[in-house]
Structure formats: C-alpha cells, structure tokens
Length: 222
Image (tube, rainbow, N blue to C red; front, side, top):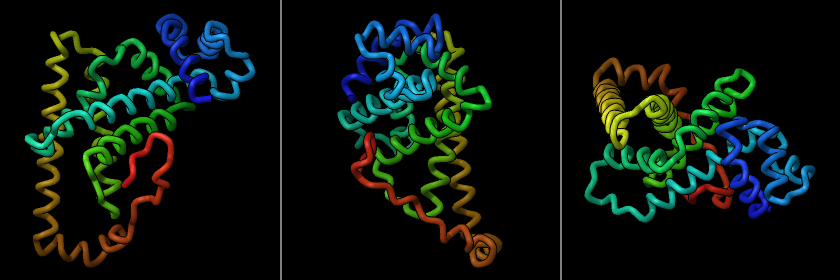
C-alpha cells in the first residue's frame, strides 16, 4: 500500500500547480497511476488534504535522511537547527508548498496544518538527539514550530539568489529564540523565578512528553 500511495502522490504533483491539493487532483492522479478510484479514496480519505499531508511527510523523511548523512559535529547547536530547516526547504517545490499553505489556511484544515508543522519540529529535535521528557519537550517543539512556520512564509515570497534572504531571516529568528532561552534560564536562577517554580510553576514541571511507540511510521526511536 505504501508503494501505491507513492505512485498516486508522484502522479499528483504535476496537477497540484493547476488544481491545488484537491479531490480533482486525486482523481486525475489515480487514473494516471493506474489505481482504482475507490482504493485511492481509501488511501487518501480526505482527498487533497491527505495528499498534501503525505507530501509534507515525504519532505520530513527526506530531511531526516539527509540530516543523518550530514556531519554536524563541528556546528553549534543553533547552527544544527538552522541546517535542519534549510535541508527541509532546499530542493522543495515552492508552488506545491504554496498550494498547501493556502489549503491549510482554511479554518477546517488549520488543525491538520498545525499538526504537520509540529511534526516537522518533532522530527528535527528527535534527529538532533533531543531526550527531554518534561515541559521542555513541548516548549522546544512549540518554539521551533513558530520559527519553521514563519520561515516557510518568508521563503514563499523570497526571490533572492539561492534564497539567501530566507536563510538570513532564519538566522535572526533562531538568534531571537536563543536570547529568549538565556532569559528563561536566568529567570529560573533568580529568587522570583525560584519562587515561581516552587509554587505555580510546579504544576508545569509535572508535564511529561507523550510516550509514542518507537516503531511508529516515520518516527525515530528515542
């Protein structure tokens, strides 16, 4: 079934610039791939939405494979994150992403789009060796989701050579996050911060990362 899904997705890519991530694209792709229309609908029950999510998941998979093949040992951690985001966007068709952004901006699909971005952030942190199990698991992914989402929007409008303006924007966003992390660390060390963590903040310290099976498709073992 994975092979059939890939065939339908491959066939769909030529139709998306004209018909978007839509049921019309799914029907045309199924016909071109020689896949029964009913089977295609079963594989992509929400039509274009599931096609777009499959395309996004494929991009995440390509990124994590390229990360595994890249020597990051000489890079600062913030530069490893930047490299991961660049790998995610480089060689990606802007028009296909633009059509997906339009789709997921609709209220009925916004949750699915947010989930896809969160999934990308999770894949990056996991590939970079994140082992956090507490509140940090959530804050790291929420912060990187915001960085990645804003970088994608900037990238979609970037016409600079080699998307240099996008990578500079990404560096600025990551620098801002790193400054925030430094402020957060200093807050924890001052008397007010310690009092907060001993009082109201103690509730958040009980949060734990979700326990997902290591063999979940597309997921890296912890």
